Image (tube, rainbow, N blue to C red; front, side, top):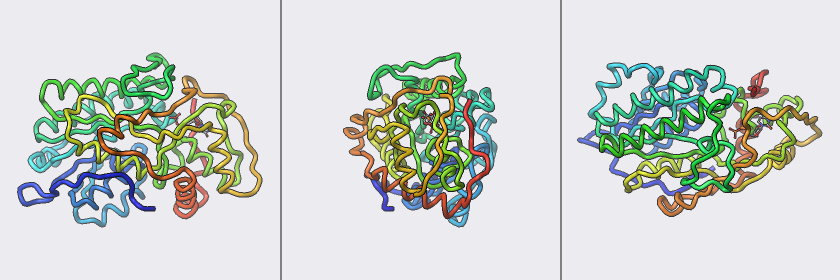
Length: 345
Ligand code: UDP
């Protein structure tokens, strides 16, 4: 599948050396694609990941690249000397470090909150020291169960701060507040992306996401699980589109004082997604309905006008094409998939 979106090309070298981009969470699903794209652009990449929810196999293709280095590190802990020593070379810091799937981030909610607040602060401080630009991957979850549809960036959201999703939703909201405070004080240049549902190769089969769950269940010949009646909606963005958007946002020349939605505005019900996956799987499958998880948003669709205007970006990969590539990847790479897919509370 070809790359999509417009990626601004910057001079890759700084002081005669390749520019160093730090990617926290770079071994994860989106992070691993971002590392690849940065290397392809000519950057050196330093990837930090605690491997809590990332897959070691996502690193395989990256580690053979001489411009890629990896350190297993949890950003909740103060950054180690081997990272601080690279401060003068660091030009860009992407923060993608946080479990993002509800069953996984709910497993250790305290850690999820600390990753977003303490971890983000560690990276912002590094950006300040390095004079580097910092990009926070925030989330559509900051809108909670939205009562405005589609969601523009100036919608302030409907988040339940006492529910089981709060560690993630409120953690990301706090991380945004922190990033904008650094920017307001002139301490670091920041960019904040609000990422909507994303899918593609390198997803963790045990992530508990609807796309990975349904594909893995279909490949194993298991029952396909639909939470609730499947009438809730989501808008699914293929990972190459998303990565192009993240890089365009990082390089965009503006004051950075506004978050930017990145996602695919084509909205569908979970049942419509199921139909597409059943079409790829062929044959007859049994579908079972499970209870809808607590605080599961009813509808979600990004308003991407800001990204279109500011970055000239919009998704290019249609769902049929992206899903076919994702299905083929799961079939080839993961075979039968993990025996236990993630379950949500
Ligand atoms: N979902 C589902 N079956 C599954 C996993 C998820 O029907 O096996 C539903 C889930 O309740 C939600 C939607 O699919 O309404 C998207 O869930 P996902 O976890 O992929 O993303 P998020 O809830 O973060 O948007």
